[in-house]
Image 1: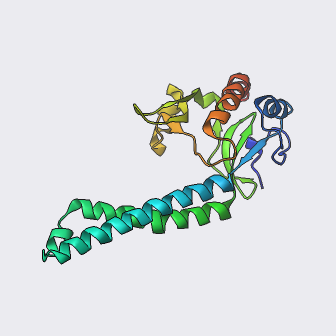
Image 2: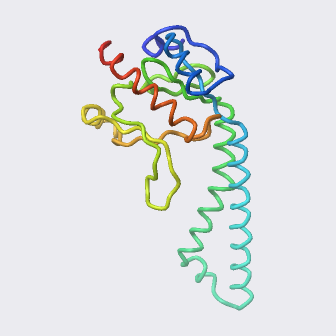
Image 3: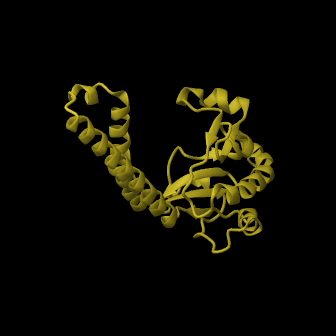
Length: 206
């Protein structure tokens, strides 16, 4: 069952129109909006990981074969930290990434917005403990987490929420997961609008 705290009204299936105006209309009616994972994004991520993984594998084999053909010791390979970095990258791209993709496709994860806050769902059910109330969010930002890095969407927690949730190891800055049918750039105006509209509303329900 979907928890009542997450649903002020009736949960609705994902609307075809996920524009900010359409999403806000549904939220204003007390409905929750599901933004599901993008199968295309997940598959493209796997494809990229496989390309990188096979590239690392070819480079690893080429370096290893060259070392052996020159009559050098195996210890030069074993003691080389860069070669271990190759191994970690190969395992991550060719083993961990495919497993992660299969799990995510099976979980059918979704980002859920409601007048109460934002949460994660699997198979259409809100996951317990994932609700982040709007009043715990100080700001929703879309900016570079590091210089020269890509822009990412993140929640900046209030000081009170940071103190209260610190025991759970929660960072004041929470990066929003990617891989949904709406990318971070398209999600940003929706989250900003919902946060502005419902922060006072959720505070009044405490």
